[in-house]
Amino acid sequence: MLLLNSSKELNVSLVFIAVFIFSLFFADLEISAYEPFLELSKFVTSIKDINFSSIDLLIDAALQTIYIATMAIVFSAILGFILSFYFSNIIVRTILAYIRAIHEIFWALIFLQVFGLSTVTAILAIVLPYSAILAKVYAEILEEYDTFDKRTVSRKASRISLFFYTKLPNAMPHIISYTLYRFECAMKSSAILGFVGITTLGYYLSSSFNEGLYNEVWLMLIIFYILIASIKFWFNKFTILVLFVISLIQMPLSLNSFSSENLSRFLFEDIVPSPIKNDYTVIEGLTWFYKIFINEIVPGIFNTIVLTQVSLVATAVLALVLFPLISYKFVGKFGRFFSHIFLVVLRSTPEYILAFLFLSIFGASMLPAVVALMLHNGAIIAFIIGKQSNEIDYVLDKSTHLNLYTYEVLPKLYNSFLAFLFYRWEVIMRESAILGMLGVATLGFYIDSAIADIRLDKVVILLFFTALLNITIDLISKKVRDYLKTDASITTCGCELK
Image (cartoon, rainbow, N blue to C red; front, side, top):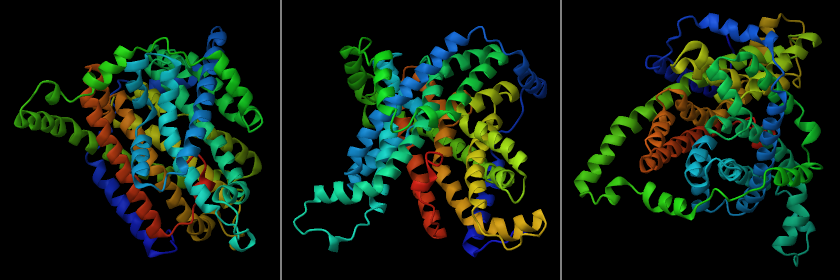
């Protein structure tokens, strides 16, 4: 039996397992495809038929993916750093919480109405949520590294001098490290923006998926994996400015597609609630909102929570199964090498792309989304916990693998495991909402339908509740981590956790 260090860990685990079991009764996990495993076999075997005839086009798409991610992370870092100084303000913190709670694809769909399919749309879609995320993380890092001894500092020193000569030098290595980690996330975001029409790798991936051209899908995935795996060689503090300048030259931020009339219509007509535009009475306005709330918001929130909780526990189980694969106490050097590659591939593939793949294989239900979220997030947590398992001191060295895992490794790592899992909880919720665009009736499904019907006033309301739901989950997650008294720090988690 699993031995936990405290009753708190057991209580939290039992509560989430109970919620998982309850959610299963409402989760649509049906396989609706006629021959799913035939389709899966077709996908796997098509890797041997990779066609390189379109390699020039795909390399261009890969470069555009890099350009957008580079510009987005630079602008996000600048804005995030500035905003981090005001993060203690409750108004600023609340606004940023709402901004970062809305997924990049939702922001892209909004900016499409004003800027069209342009570089500006892609950059803004990433910069807004990423600036809010970086502001939060930078503020936490600066607070964490406020460690100088005030007795050694001259009383005449200004606050600005103290900041630049004491706090910032301590915090800067961690700020740079986190920003570089965040670039990998920006690469994934840039890629999936192709699913809404931006010509990054995701644009051609979606086309090939829809046409069943899996050999082309494999080529694009391999290109993407190579980009992610090689980031540390071409994106660092020495190359970032050069890449930024090249990106601006290759993809200038042109506003040719911008129209002041479109912006004016968007702000003063499109997003204005219908009752205000049409002079509804109070009763008519409340009836309008009640229909949206009952028919779309309530089922959207419910399905988003169900998908999130099923995926969260599935992620936990997979992570606990996979992390020994990269631990030297359980697997040899040869096995750890290939296990490491396997986990890197899974964690490098955005959930949206995985879900798109499994949707083609299993058909429309929650199952593709659950599998995608489980694989991606499970690999991330397994990777982190596996690395931690290599750093602990073992007592039961000569015990069997099962006893070592059950009685020593897991009890020592379980608290950190829960912390990392709950850091990912908000991310899983955000992704659960956006995966509704693939047909699952989460909030993203209703947002996508409202955009298709050009009901942007309804979109704004749905996005508000989407952000509110994510903020609520983030607050609960923090309370749970405080209850467990976990010591996992955001500065050690990297972008893989937020």
